[in-house]
Amino acid sequence: MIIKDKLIKEYPLTKKIDCFFECFEVIKRRYVIFYDEKINKENIKSLLDVFNENTNNNFSKKKTLIVVACTNEQFNKEDLLFFNGVDTFIVYYLINENTNEIYFNDQKMLLFCIDWKKIIKKFNEILK
Image 1: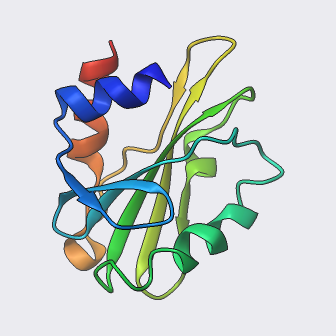
Image 2: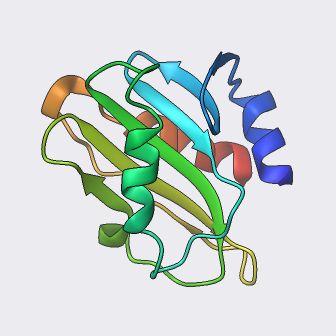
Image 3: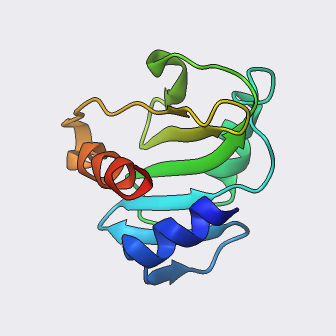
């Protein structure tokens, strides 16, 4: 994934987290996970448990996980934000390999002070 290398280098993402996935802490309670499998509308919800389970031990209790991955489908902004109802937001940042479109949710969230809007904005600047 060339996009992954570009984001790691130009953001820069330097604080690697020991995790099942390739993961970096951007700032306190905000983490970027690079997921190498394609995400589609069928598996997007089932992956929530996978990401949440694999980040419980090495991460802060309250957190935002920004999952960067590829897709072949189109998504709406609302389809890319999930909250486990307790302490974890998962936001998908998806790149469509067929159309080169990028799908993301950049809304401002003040709950737990774990906003991700600035991170998404910086990703978009890097990938333009």
